[in-house]
Amino acid sequence: SAVISQKPSRDICQRGTSLTIQCQVDSQVTMMFWYRQQPGQSLTLIATANQGSEATYESGFVIDKFPISRPNLTFSTLTVSNMSPEDSSIYLCSVQRGLSNTEAFFGQGTRLTVV
Amino acid sequence: AQSVTQLDSQVPVFEEAPVELRCNYSSSVSVYLFWYVQYPNQGLQLLLKYLSGSTLVKGINGFEAEFNKSQTSFHLRKPSVHISDTAEYFCAVSAYSSASKIIFGSGTRLSIRP
Image (cartoon, rainbow over all chains, first blue to last red; front, top):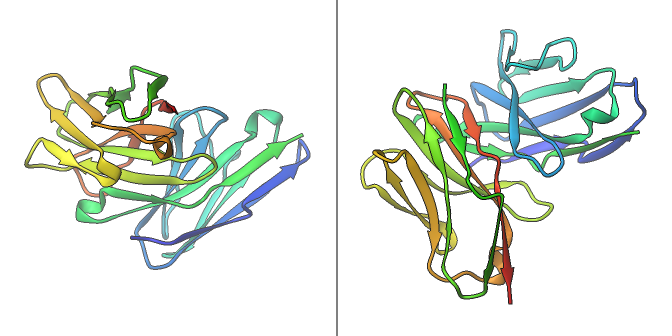
């Protein structure tokens, strides 16, 4: 299993500002994943964060809007930049463990509301 | 690339009735398949997974799923549901390689009526 802590658990932010979400894992992992879950929707992968290299972004997501840091093997941050109400979502950090790293574990998420 | 389709956005059933939540996937390579559950205001939890071997997979809370390669399906079943099974259920797929990213379906909301 994996214990994943995310901070903050929720926040209400003004449009035009930025929020940095932190994700801490209880042991070292090669890859960390950031997802977005918009209200009533499924999870959409934003990017994959590897330690020591730039994150790999999925189609529709760009580094200028969602910069990611991965300073070590147990920690990552996701910043939501220049926020608008459309960025209101739950943001989830995830790691994969188990046989062939197939089992995903998730943090409790950060519920972001942009006003 | 992989994709997954959950055919039902909402499934209402009566308590103690059987339920099937449908999932179909698309992939040009072999895949791993998963069902995750999200209880209200909680994070995601793995319900069960198919990696290889027996096509009938048993998970937690009495759920099971059957991998059908010819029909590219991985339907989730439970013979008798309880009120506590009320949740959102997500089918997911990943390519047959180490630490491949997981792609989620749109989710099925299971609501149990007493």
